[in-house]
Image 1 (tube, rainbow, N blue to C red):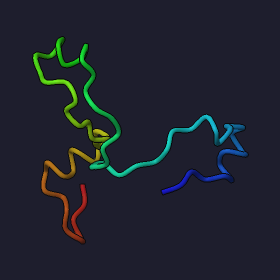
Image 2: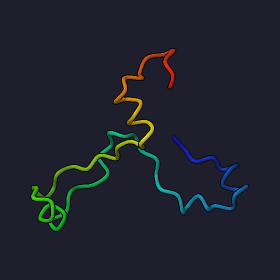
Image 3: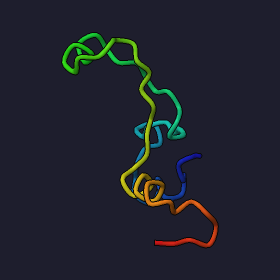
Image 4: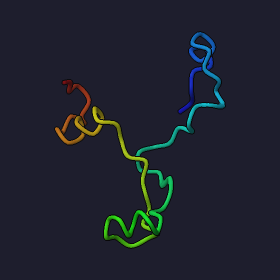
Length: 70
């Protein structure tokens, strides 16, 4: 749950430029009025961080138990 300072140093990426690391279910914001209007939704709906494509695919495929691989 933290960026590698060693890798950031190697690739000359300032830690301050990287986003905070959160869990997929963490609420990271709320739906704005404009976005809600554009989508036909109610403003203020919580927005969760979500997961990357590969992680979501593993979960969707049921690859959640120890000893399973894809």
